[in-house]
Amino acid sequence: MIGKCLCGVVQFEIVGELPNLYQCHCSLCRKVSGSSSNSAMLIESKNYKWICGNQHISSFARSSGFRSDFCSKCGSPVPNKMKIGNGYWVPVGLFEDILEETLEVEVAAHLYVGSKACWHTIGGNAKQYEKMPEISILNKILMRTSR
Image 1 (cartoon, rainbow, N blue to C red):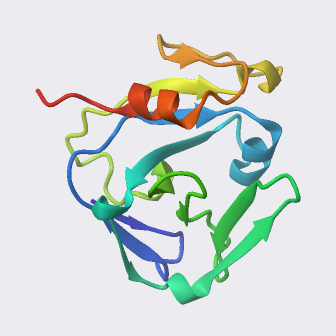
Image 2: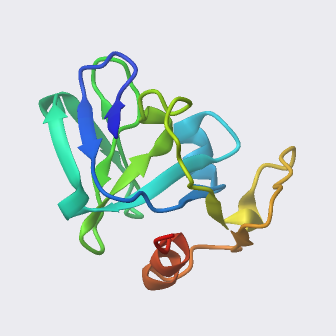
Image 3: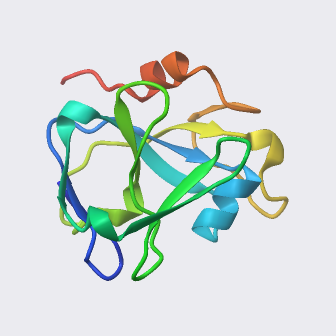
């Protein structure tokens, strides 16, 4: 599956079975996404490859450790290497032709629901966490079994 920023200068590819995704409702993710939450996947490094444009990536980091990588040309949030574990954080809105793909992924977890926007109602049956669970717990929830 190919992902691109808004202008297309930053491109990446993911191979293998996709994990389920999560939505983070913390105030920082709301600001980065400009919406009620940030939808993302955690992808193992072995299944991730930069195609082009990573020299056009800029970063913003807070003293808390929160980091946002984005295309310096169009401002789209782009994947970044996770500090913990061996993988990448990938915003799912960057995937090309997502409506044309047969994806059997779903939102499996909602994070930081304790600080969600007051105007947003979370639907569905995904697991909800007041804050961030341990990364091992989150990875287990996002993993999909082969059918």
